[in-house]
Amino acid sequence: MPGLEDLYREIILDHYRSPRNRGELECPPAHRIEGFNPLCGDEIVVSLLVEDGALADIKIAGTGCSISQSSASLMSAAVKGKSVPEVRELIQTFKGMMSIHEATLPAGDGGKSVGDTLVEPMAIDINAIGELAALQGVVKFPVRIKCATLSWNTLAQGLDELGET
Amino acid sequence: MALSESTTAFDVAAVRKDFPLLARTVHGKPIVYLDSAASSQRPRSVLDAMRHYDETTHANVHRGVYTIAEEATRLFESARVAVGRFVGAPDPAHEIVFAKNTTECLNLVAHTWGRTHLHPGDVIVLTEMEHHANIVPWQMLAAERALEIRWIPVDDDGQLVFDDLEALVDGARLVGLTAMSNVLGTINPVAQVAEAAHRAGAVVVVDAAQAVPHLPTDVTAFGADFVAFGAHKMLGPTGIGILWGRREILESLPPFLGGGEMILDVRKDGFTPNEIPWRFEAGTPPITEAIGLEAAVAYLEGLTMPAVRQHEIDLTTYAMGLLRDRFGTDITIFGPPDPADRGGVISFALGDVHPHDISQILDEYGVCVRAGHHCAKPLMRRLGVNATARASFGPYNDEADVDVLAEALQHAREFFS
Ligand SMILES: Cc1ncc(COP(=O)(O)O)c(C=O)c1O
Image (tube, rainbow over all chains, first blue to last red; front, side, top):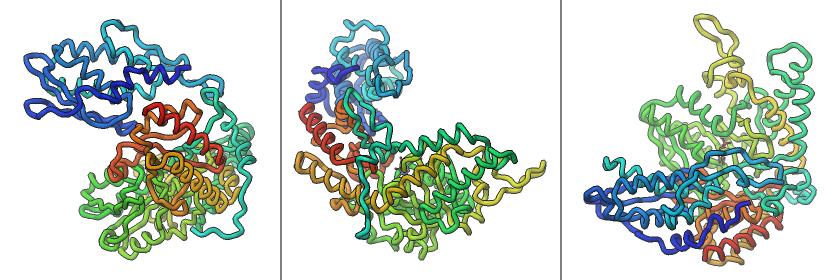
């Protein structure tokens, strides 16, 4: 059974309590993009400033649960200053970590609990993602995956809108 | 609502034993199921009735002449009458339509009544506390027909504001409202709204998905024209929704979906629709589910609805008191302050702990509460929140469940402090 400590790792709680890169950037020159989680009503606002093919600045606003907020904060710290291709790659890696490739329905017999064996994260290079690895435990709580990926999808959409590849 | 002195309380411990699911554990803890507003658990009598039907009687309805087909048809139609009587339908055999769920019932009204009666510029009135099921079908129609939607506002206590009711319904063709909010628990004065709506010449559609399981409900006392609800929130199975419609109105409406069962005759050049209620029931209906629904109605009648209501007032009073004592100003309970004005639904915010996180921690203690917008985003915006945590009660919940809830919330509070 996955325990709460798998989900709420210390780094996650830290980023939740003291989020990095909080706020919004002036638009223009920055680009502003909103993301919604229809499941829980969470909203995220990502402001991007792309200069010379790199993510010169990023800010996060909006409200959400500890997982969506900390993931956004961790993301902002991880992508700030990186080149757009590097950011794209990190988005891919992160989403790979959050993907479920074996989803079986849990048995409801009272003996087994949801989440025991139903998910297996994709193999990724943990060393390459630094603090983001703290979010790995989220895959064991399938309903929370959308919380963790919200900011990343929003960022990807922002880059798409800017035509940045 | 004032309850008569003769309301006999039921034995909650005995009721609990009737619900097999309550015997399970979650993460090694006895389950504390506090999400009946989303879907209630089913007593053994419902499960047994469905199984017995499946094992002994099942056949398609309204078609065969053989014994079990005739028995199945009789049982199916008997469920229609039972549920109709349960909500005071004057002519249950004709006025009760089965559909998939509450949502489909409301869509049915939008498609059949709406499409034949609403024209560009017409006005629909809804309340700010509606479930999306009683908003989106009307918005879809409004977009297609260029209709105007007006909203009855909600005040800070979670009550509808009727100051401008006459003006709001003036010129309206349809008024849709929930009899009881699935978020705030607010019990709305449906009869009062229906009267004003009728004076203005509007038809009244009531979303009774929450009211029917928790309050004595009488469609004629509502004075409404359509009343929709679903079996799975009233101790019955999923897969069957119930629409009551005033007979004269139903008679005048075209079919909903097309197919078998809803026709009297089909020729190459057209079809003749069936009588009501079958006109609105295209295809094989939810038969096993109807059997389960009748058993659920019987179970609720056994408890008696006034007693169910009293039980929920008592439990809500206890819960609101305990949560306020325990968490003081740290907890915000949305909706009417007086438990007598609300059903057994408590939406709350605890400090700045996000509802999603609350629900996650509570799960560790076996406590099932819902976190989210509860399919009522306009209401969430009115409350100024993205989401709430919501605990809701059924007749099987007791004070011990509330104690575990409070204990688990304490842990959630500490975890995120
Ligand atoms: C007030 C209200 N209306 C409508 C619905 C929709 O019910 P269903 O999803 O069964 O169609 C619900 C339940 O979620 C509800 O609480």
